[in-house]
Amino acid sequence: METESEPYVRLASLRQLHLVVAQLSTARSLADTLQTVADGVVEGLGFEIAAVNLVRPEGDLVVAAVAGSQGAEAMMAGRVGSRASWDRRLSMGEAWGNLRFIPYTEGWVLDDDDVPQWHSAGPAPQSPDDWHPMDRLFAPLYASDSELLGVLSVDRPRNGRRPGAWGREALQLYSSQAAIALSNARLRSNMQRALVRLEREQSALRASEESFRQAFEYAPSGMAVAEMGGDQHGRLIRINDALCRLLGRPASAMRRYSFSDIVHPEDIGTLLRTSAEGGRAELRLARRDGSYVWVSLRNSVVADTADGPRFLLTHVEDIEDRKRHELQLAHRASHDSLTGLPNSAELRARLNSRLCARPLPTISGVMHTDLNGNGNGNGDGEGFASGLQFDDAGSGVLASTGMYDPHHTHAVPPTGTVQGEKGLAVLFCDLDGFKSINDRFGHNCGDAVLVEVARRLSAGVRDNDTVARMGGDEFVVLTDGVGPAEAQDLAVRLRNAIIPPIRVDGRAVRVGASFGIGWAGCGMTAEEVLQSADQRMYVEKRSRSKGQRRAG
Image (cartoon, rainbow, N blue to C red; front, side, top):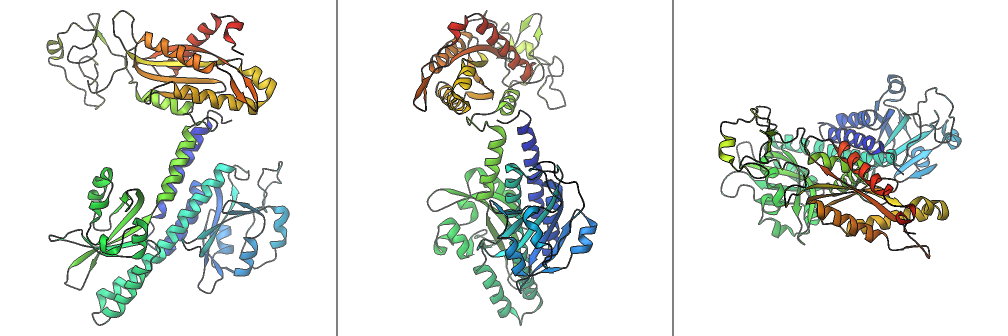
């Protein structure tokens, strides 16, 4: 089970991974891209040394970039290893998804082959999970057509341990993006050379056009040419097969559109903000079947002749898998791996988003909820708001009284003295009798009970409510816009939903539940709100006998 701090560590790792992946698209040349790939491993993935071995036209692999060690760079940079030796390495050891790990117990047979390698002295491993100085870890870099572009080799994890599942997945994601960056760098290099030839010599126009045509038509990712200026500005006039396949639309139909016609409505602003001069944007385009695909657009302006019309050349890269991985990684960092519910970190984030730093103040002993006098005030909203100014910090706080901007939905705990009061209720749930199920039937049975309890809790609340797992057998429900009676009624319904027997592996087990109801209010921290609900849950638990608490 995840520790409470692990989601924060994963979020930090995810942010760093996003930063180094973003750096891949900033390199302007193939050489810069290769060095950026190696630097990204050292800066963002927790390894001290990385090398990029690039496949040469004749098939051998040359060490094209090294990061993390000047000694390793001096010994390896520019040296060549045969394709046969590399194929042997990529077929040995353990397959970690797309990665290849060769432990030192097997790698000794590679010490005398012709692949450039460098090992630093280090302590012998104390446990099976420790990294040995002679361990080897490779990430093959494949193009979209499965062509091997190169191999990324990494060494010396900073924590001294072999990468776990999280580290392996991060390295696989990074290597897939590095392969795309290398493919694009080679494509950009070819296209830039073609464009230079077009601008330099009119006599070489036909040859350059053919070169451009081939690069355009046979590019592995989508490309399009659009008009610039005039009544037809933005209209697509040329589309390659890869883009047609990506969007499921024939070229004849595509020539009737511009990108603004097929972009997702929520992304039209992003498209319009993208500069035509080398602009870049990530957005969604519509397929023929009505679905949307995430793409990266990169625009370049191309002149037809020296003084002729200009066209917009757009490179369209399919990033759907990357976006899906990002969403999956973000979901894993913010949700409980067993039940799929939001975890404690996500619960606190959602709770904090509803709370501001200071409580709603009282004036002359009267509580006001907004500038119109609505709430527990005297109704004289116009006179009350007269002459008040917002502070310059942009926090929404009124400078003269400390009152908040009425656009902020202020959370105020119900006092119980005014009819119809509603607030943000926090229901803290602790299962009764769960430990005995774990002890008698094992953790697999206990896990199944937790999953079923999570399902029953989720089924018993509204769509906009939050059900989260705090850890162990504790759950929390956030429900907004309810009064004390409604919150108490919800707790009773949820307890009754939990009590019925749960069938696991042919046996029926039962658990009970104790609920404590707390109320969130601005000026409180998330921890204070949860602690209040937790304390009330224990008061409620102690008010009932053990026999009453335990349902089975």
